Length: 457
Ligand SMILES: Cc1cc2nc3c(=O)[nH]c(=O)nc-3n(C[C@H](O)[C@H](O)[C@H](O)COP(=O)(O)OP(=O)(O)OC[C@H]3O[C@@H](n4cnc5c(N)ncnc54)[C@H](O)[C@@H]3O)c2cc1C
Image 1 (cartoon, protein in one colour):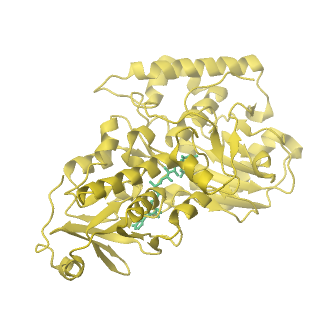
Image 2: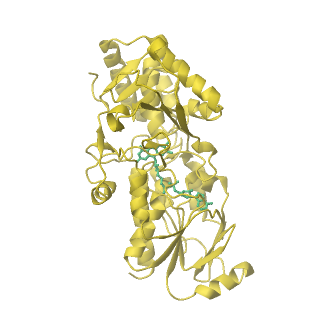
Image 3: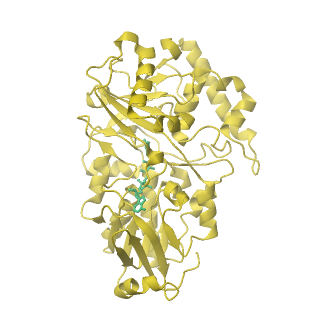
């Protein structure tokens, strides 16, 4: 068995200036209706928005959640069309010790499956299998280069992981086995190509210890549990968030919602695209951070087959492609839910390439890879579930990462309240746990706490 790797384990391998009420006549009637009792509007019913709303409701504060989609959960999106739960977005609870999601899972009595990231098999191009020593060598080289990469970058002259690796061990970038590790460990975790990720900041975030847990019945059950009893308005894309004169107004295509405070959990991709107008505009510091932080792509495809033609018990099947990012990670759902389903992940530049493919092209691409790995044993899929997060208007990417030149302060600055009225939450506002479901959850609790503090609670 290859040595254990570092970080999220090989294989997950797979106070701004308030605008005045009078300055914006469009806001007057809505504000007039709601002055007085606290009423918080949460934008987005992802896990950050739901945790914020739940915390506020538990304190007896009136709260409504406005969600663009016709469903809750955001980037937690469990699909059941293949007969069992498959995840289009987040899969794992990364580390159960101290993880706030672990308590929810217990309270909701959900069953868990603990992944063993060391339980994998690797295939090289054309179906060759690496020798044990080749794998060990590649793992050692990977760990060594990752260790030194941060030293290559200096404060003020950051460089990308691609540049750092090219300087340290250029051969790694051409070797399929190393490419598999770089894609399944770094590009998957970072949600971006090596060429975009900061060598200085990558891996500086924190995680929780303990088992990495999947929920066989789907992570969607956690958001369903959180949402119980909340006033959630679905199918209302927010267009404008205004605050001033001690009030807030959130305008959607259907309605204008007024309140005393607003928590925005709009994903970083949506903030970057400027699809929602902030009035007054976000402070310069916030806007600068939004521009600097990275928001990338990872493609996830689940395929159901008539029978299992791969090693039934092995948790992860790994493909070391010639082209980095081409389906390096396959999660075998047979041990998790007893179904003949593989969930494949593509990363980095290949993630965008695969998102641009038609369903037929995608299926052909994956079939070609499975054909290399299993030859005539490989079967065509019966059904497929895909996700194209970077094309999804209510996400526009997967999760935040430290782009070259970013600092932890860029993430954390987004957590600073604006005029004690507008509060931001979401996975991109908490450096230590960015890019995770638990980080998003914690950011929601933090924003709710900020509102309570602003109310003098
Ligand atoms: C493919 C993939 C794999 C992942 N794997 C993992 C994993 O294994 N483990 C893990 O911990 N994390 C994982 N993550 C990350 C995790 O899913 C996110 O960090 C987390 O779910 C983000 O929650 P959030 O509430 O911050 O944002 P979101 O879930 O995106 O919630 C924001 C909400 O705002 C809504 N919205 C957007 N625009 C508007 C608008 N104009 N008006 C109103 N509402 C709007 C969205 O529809 C969404 O519901 C993964 C993510 C992806 C995409």
